[in-house]
Image (cartoon, rainbow, N blue to C red; front, side):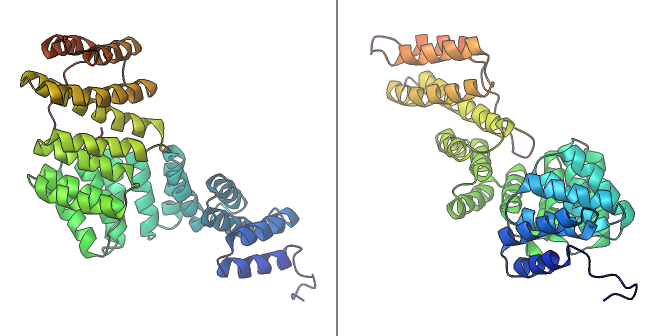
Length: 347
């Protein structure tokens, strides 16, 4: 019995059982037990924090955010709760909320490099490149051997057009043991932007072999192939990105669809220019599918999408229709795709 003569808190038993389940990686049981603990004592910030951890581990992002917010409300001075809340908010693409939570975390514990990293990622998500870079560099000042912060800084530098600096930072992350998808994609894009597109393509080809369900990796491979001038291979990569992107947010899917359609269109125009009727007709069905995907995501004006679809159908209606005529019709339905540039910026 505690010195003040009171018995154990009412949630004590559920907490201990929840901790045992969590340590055994039984996260569903841990979440259930921690939920019982907070039901018995809703003012226990530690129990809410543990519930957030268990929910996050079992993939319940919404439930984790709810629990961490309650932990922060019950004990606003707990830096780690604010930090964990910011991490889950970033995963949920709530960058405004994540920036607010991470700001509170670094104010309470300015030596926590991971909190500065989260603040940098959140600010990047909000489009605040200057604020993001400041926070990420602060993370590295606090922990000079923090590979994730190097990766995030490299991605930011790449997005803001500083490819050589980005490459240096990303290679530093790799030296420190980072080898995740985000690093590989960013490093390959930096290599391409620095004039080493072949090396970037090789790295991405290896990446998609290891992670064939990564839409971002396929899209980056398509970007690098466009830089290299191999549009046919680029289109294959963009089609793979589209297939892998079904569960991603619409803005990301729209970016993939835009690149896929532009590449298919460029192939059709090139085949028409060269008088290669077979190649022209072969790419039209792929363009029609790309146009339908782009239309469903609002990439094309609806009237233009309808016209483009009609022109593709007309082009495959019979051999009497000339490629030059269809080419003129397609140009009226869709603007000429811009020339490819080195990847690194937003799609």
